[in-house]
Image (cartoon, rainbow, N blue to C red; front, side, top):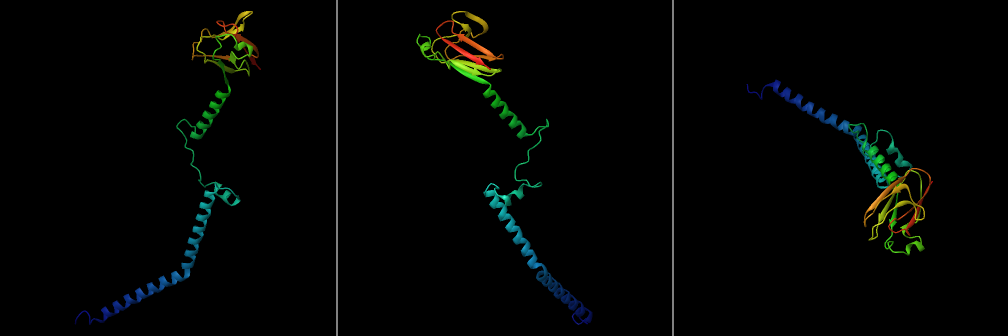
Length: 203
């Protein structure tokens, strides 16, 4: 008897066909049962993605966009902890604050062009500005923009130096720095050109 004539073989083939048909039927039922739900979930996800992109375009302005700032969301880069325990953002803020303090705690006075010749005293423009108002702890930088050498010496031409500060000779293009720690008025002048006078008022 050949294998095809074996009744047990026909039975096996029949069972296999029944199993395939049952599997196809089950897949069809599953598709009918949850297919719409899967598509519905995809549609919800697409709507949420579109809403997020719209908020992102508008810089997250509006009540609907505020939900993206809840805990667990990461719209912005998470600051990294450095080995010394600080964060990059903290370092940047400290640096910016230090720079702003440094800028506000220093003033500049120009030693005027042509001040080596009499005449600037008539308009109080030998040192510009002639009178400088600052707070205690502020530093002042005198910059010689003239072609002649000058000094910045505390005191007056009439009474001479009082010893509080003295730049000695400031050549053309050079500077002199001094920090004022006590309140009061500090008149100063140029020893080389005594008509040149100025004053610093410290509060």
